[in-house]
Each structure stands twice: as C-alpha cells, then as structure tokens.
Length: 35
Image (cartoon, rainbow, N blue to C red):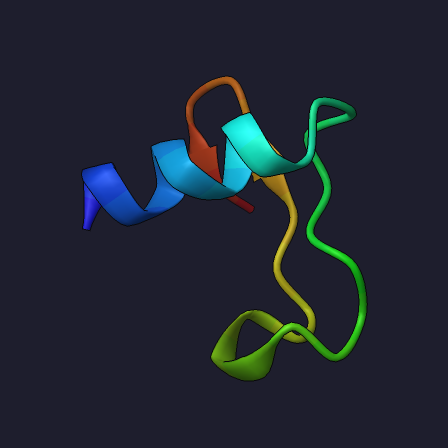
C-alpha cells in the first residue's frame, strides 16, 4: 500500500490525487498518509 501511495505522491507533487483517479477518486495524500 505504501508503495502505491508513494507512487501517487511522485506523480502528483502537490500531494493531491486528481478527482477521477480510479479508486483514489476522493483521496488526498498528506505527509503521514491518506487523510
């Protein structure tokens, strides 16, 4: 799971996953994980 989250952070340097990104539709990445 962490590897997946790290991949999202690398792809979205602002720390957010764009709306509509598959299962992560409403997720936001913070320094301590998903909030």
